[in-house]
Image (tube, rainbow, N blue to C red; front, side, top):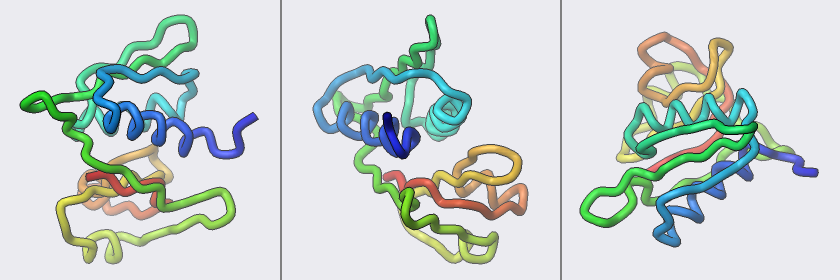
Amino acid sequence: MLTYPIGDFLVRIKNAALAGNHEAEAIATKQKVAVAKALKGAGFLEDISIKEKILTIKLAFWHKKPVLIDLKLVSKPGRRIYLGVKEIASKKGPSVFLISTSKGIFLSKEALKMGLGGEVIAEVW
């Protein structure tokens, strides 16, 4: 039994990208599907499919290299990190945050547009 299934799912995606694999699989849950849709909207994933409770994702590649360069888990089971709208806006750089808000899981850009803060799940480059 996993204690942090979203973290495990994100690490699977990261490992697939580092290994140069084009696909990764995990058991489908609502949270994992929401995370995958957010990453697809940002262009890190090419496609998402669900068959018999198995979530299959295809990583996006550009010039034969994965678009997802790195991924760092911010919140962990022992320590949750929350940011407000002003704190999210002050974070500048090439990375984006994956944020769990009261209205769903979004990237930092989308959360800012809606004026939402929340738990920072991961930082993605």
